[in-house]
Image (cartoon, rainbow, N blue to C red; front, side):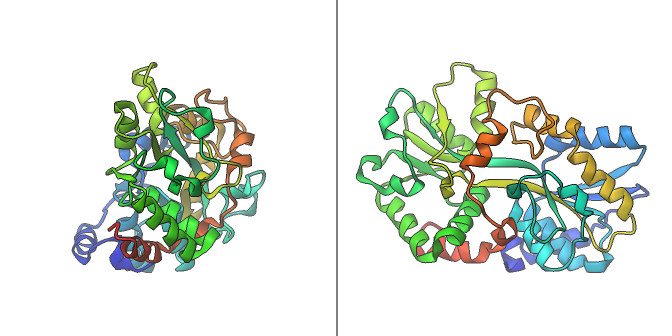
Length: 332
């Protein structure tokens, strides 16, 4: 994945020109939004007495920044929004090896084969649909079914969205570029309706613009939290289908950190029952451990493992190849 795909030279230069000066115990680069994760960071500070300075930003841009800073980076921890960025930093040798016991008991879909980062929470790809306009017989078994004539003009997608592009990368890993390109072109020829993001697709299903949307699992619960009668439901494809990709938000310790022990303590905290309960209850993401109370609007922990395809998360770093394929399909 080339740096130019993550962020422009101007953005990186601006970040480098604004160093994060802090006397805090730990410095965290967070690609996760402040409103989403600040409460859990504050809880860590309260529990441990350690102060955490946070630089928030786009995951891709922060990943470029870490690469530009190298051993000079003030960051002790990197919390990425997706596995692709974590895999990029891992392959660049910028992350420290984590203690082996951190991975004990974690399903393989939440662990890095490199052993130097770990998932803090999971997000499943699903299809949102209208229960009023879609019969159970029309539920697709595979994401490849959506290029069939019966779905013509009824499906929404967001080709420029980062989570969709991560999914396309996974499809390339699982099925190869040729079949992935054929699917992209088939969807385009079948009149798939383009949206800017996930939430507008879910709203589009409710408004009757489309009957199906390809989204992350947590958008619909947010709509339902405001309106219990919101007219959309969601489901999984058949077990193991690549359309059910579980992408993750990952956390890793920088190899250059002078505070390795404290940084590892932060990683452990994100895997603690309290933090995992927060992610599933407040953010509607999937916990990576079993020590939580099941969120009733999410699939059961074991059921998610059954539906999820098995993908090496480190390999989701090839954004360049995915963008090229999307351009070849005329979608960018």
